Length: 517
Image (cartoon, rainbow, N blue to C red; front, side, top):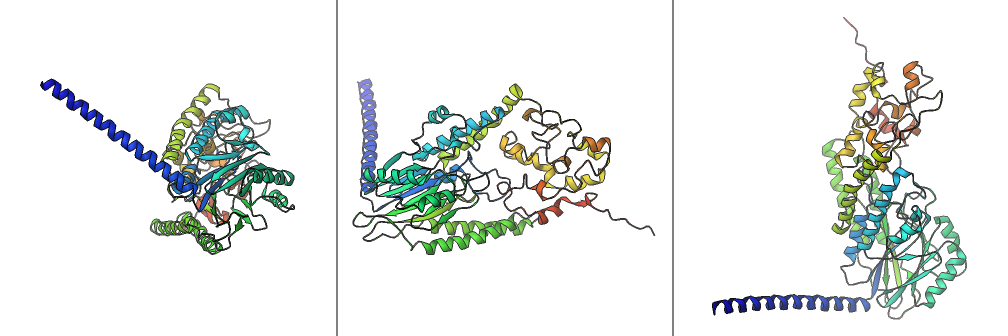
């Protein structure tokens, strides 16, 4: 009797648990249907556009307050997706790789990174993406195997956006722009975005053609690696936009639906917020220079950093504020979203990045051990790298200055963040990386860590054998420094300001001679 009673109670509890689960599932399904229905009847939509990411999961971290990161982009998209408006995320291409060709030693890291980027984009709910030549660095089969929703050149994709439809077209010239725009309209699109695979100037020329048939053109291709340093908006009959490259900014497009469907117009009421955001941007640039100034007082630096975070939050509020209803007409606004270091990252995308960071160093080191090759020797009559020890024999007085500089701790900064075996970082933290007579293998950097003497003065074997000012770079100029202190890695670098920080008695300055009484 007792046994039957216990069995009955257990069964009742199980049925009750199942009932609660079914109830929760039904409630979630009902809630999802209600949200979907509300979005179908929404008074607008939000589009997020990215382009020219060039294989960047995040900034290198060599300077403070560096923009970018797929996890920060994911937060912007997924946070907006919590609201009542439909959200579309569109990528313009040239995102998976940074170069159209790869060296054998780069392949493991770059393929792994492309997979991580693809996974993050999926978690962001990517609607569609165009394809650029950088995406095919490992071939079309590899690209297609990533399973992303692709838009081939010349093709059209029409996406539901509540009460309206958004057309996305992939083009590279004026004729293609007009044809694809016409097709998108025929398929029901009210707002058409052109992903233009060309430079900003080429996109402007296409936009100037009669009746281009689109509301917005996004230039998805920067001319060189460092030509996409700024967000750009060209206001014309058809606005043309270029995004800061390497995943440092998003473009946010807010669509506002009027009472009757019609052609969309760019709202000028958003210009006040844009001007305020631009003013904050200028203040941030000044603060960044002061924060990154070598030798800045720690207390002052912390105060400036807090002020910077406050300004970023204020600008972010401006850039993400809801857009006022359009009234009778359909309208839209454009806002750049710089992905600042103090903005949050989304856990789902950050998990992807963390897994990549954990994997890639091990992969690169194993590849170097199995397949790595030593650097070729220098050409006959050319100098080889000899290491700091050979320099110390004659220039011992210079070493206290070097040892007190950040150059001496360059390798440690990579170890601190677990990036000492990341190929994008190694070159500027090792002396003689991938140079004749230098070091070309991650498993053989011992003795060449840090920014040593030869990083600035050039390989020293000839100088060691026969000291002379003719066979060494005695006074390196700015051109040497900017090979690493470029706009990407050291955006606030100023040669005149930074140079004194690596000079001192015995190293660029005469030693003070004390007279004896």
